[in-house]
Every structure is written in C-alpha cells, then in structure tokens.
Length: 229
Image 1 (spheres, rainbow, N blue to C red):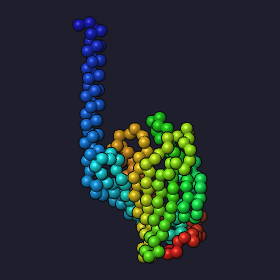
Image 2 (cartoon, rainbow, N blue to C red):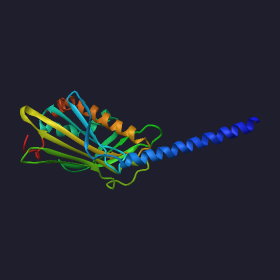
Image 3 (cartoon, one colour):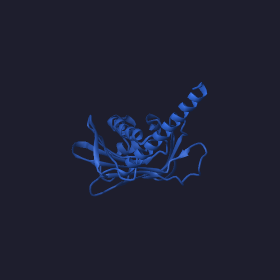
Image 4 (tube, helix red, strand yellow):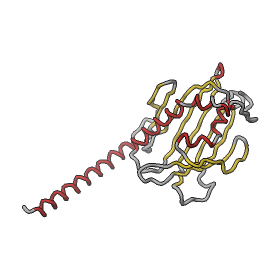
C-alpha cells in the first residue's frame, strides 16, 4: 500500500470518527436539555453564602439562586446596586444610566467582553426597586429591555436576561440578600461550562457583598421610596 492510500484511509477514518463524536454530542445535548427536576439543588455552602441551581426540562442552562446575610441598612444596599461605577469590578465595561424615570426606576446599559473571539455582549436593562410596606422587603428587578436602544453594531445584544433580588430585613440590622438569575449570554460554550461559571460567579459576588455595602460613600445614602428601613 502506497503512502497516498494510507493517508486517504487515515483521513476517512478521522472524518468518520469526528462525525460519530459530533452525532454523539448532539444526542447527549438533547438528553441533557430534556432532563431536569425543576427543583433547587444546593451547589455551594461556604463562608455564609449558599448557592443553588435549578435544571428545568427543555433548557440547557440552569437558573441560579444565592443567599447571604449582611450587616447594613437598606439605603446602603440600594445605593450600591444603583452605583454604575462599580461595573469594572465585575468585569463589565461602560456602564451608564440612559434614562432615569424616577429614583426607583431607570434604564441602563453595560457591556461584557467574552473570550474565544466572541463579540462583546451588550446588556440594555430595566432596573426597578419596589418595597413591600408590610414586610419591609425590597424587590429589585433587573431585566432585559433590548428595544430601548437602537441596535448597535459594536456588540451582540443579550435579550434573555432576568435577575431578581430580594433584600429581606432581619433583626439586629441584618439584611438577607437573595438573588435569582436566569439568562443566556448567547455564546457557543458547552452548557456545563456556563453553568459552572454562573454558580461560581454568584458565590464570588455574594462573598464580597459585606465589603461592598461597608464603603464610606454608601453610608449616608437615602431614598425617599424606602419607608421601612
């Protein structure tokens, strides 16, 4: 057998193997997407932070929920979340409020660079804070509003983005921070990689939350829509 025939046979073998692997990956992805209990599963319980994930049938990406208690007042917590200058600490770029409707409702924009030649992801979001006067709980809704701005060729605009917080007042000046996040950045990463990134990212952010609200610039913050501190 001459060299050309050997190369041809090896090429055919490799192409066949790749085709089989790709087909197998598609089958695995299908069964993974159709799986799930739609129940919260504890992923991390460390340093006062609990992170849970939920896999629902029909979705490859998991929802994430996380909790942490902080010593703070409600005004400081809200001031931190409204501060656009903190964006670079979380890896994002060019955060700015583009339309403030009131002290508790505004639209903003920020961008995230993604690795492996993915284009920058642009988020255009609606942020709203609502307090339950009976319980004192503040609900913070941070959700996609992609049609507020014209499409920008700079970036890929994310349209599936839902992040909800509850700030729950407890005794002795403690506030429980509860976060739920469900979004799809539209990148071609394996689901298991993104799910791991989402869980670890939630843990890292909430682990630092006490240091965030302790900052001097938030201590004297005040919002008139907060009637129960």
